Length: 101
Image (cartoon, rainbow, N blue to C red; front, top):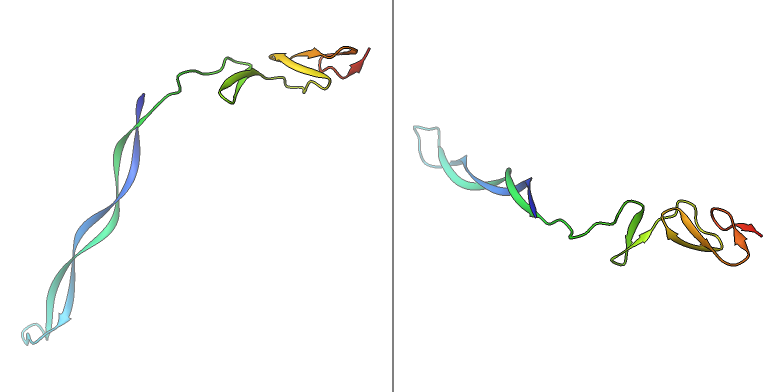
């Protein structure tokens, strides 16, 4: 496993000041009030990632959890048995088994 730094959001509380009408003549009938509000803030955190146990060799790809060979050209009348290698059905030849013999 390995860790990566990620940026995550969280609600950050802050003191919000607002004014309300009141009977305070000295302050022109305005009184200061406080309330806790939340704004979205961001922080860095560590996230643990897990590497896969195995990886397919070059020229192969994973299909249903097994590594299968990759043929750039589709084997027309045959099957891919190794990277870019077709095994042709009887009577067919060529690099992608498309030539009749």
